[in-house]
Length: 238
Ligand code: 1GP
Image (cartoon, rainbow, N blue to C red; front, side):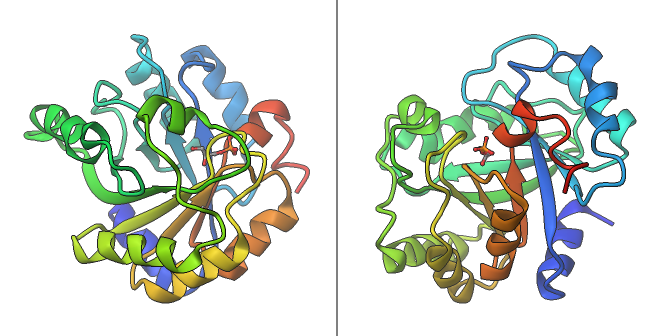
């Protein structure tokens, strides 16, 4: 089954999915086996690979090792068009809809197009919304865009809906890696109730209670990065 079909089926069945974000800047291919060993018999269903600033040469090797060691679908979550490798199962083809910087709305995508043109990667068009989370995050700094206000749920919902109407198949509500405050639950609920496509939520989520709350609010896929980076036993302890 294609990755998107399984995400959409989970969305329809209200089945909670959980992804780990692996930052290639901080992770070498040789570490993949040990990392994935920590994910066995945990609720983790997907791996995302990407970072705001990574430019190194080992992306393909890392993705291959992660796929082999985990047996999970691996999706690219690129901070930059150069972070593309055929080794992955698919790519979250992001457009930063919360921002007003054409570089991240369309220019990066034009640069990526030749790499994706004859690719076997499954392309998952994703509207990416950065939500204010207490302090400046790497996404905000690198993209040179302002996040959406965290108390204006309707504006977030209409931005997400505009993405859906443009043909995005997923919406990602992002507080930013290591965010002080995760996306507000009421915002997740408002956005989820507006959309007819699966919702991804990540940034600043550090406990099982927060994961469950995000799922209950309407997230299909919850993404954990920093909590697992800081504690490799995070998932096995759940
Ligand atoms: C970042 O949403 C992801 O893009 C994960 O964030 O590192 O805060 O878990 P954290």
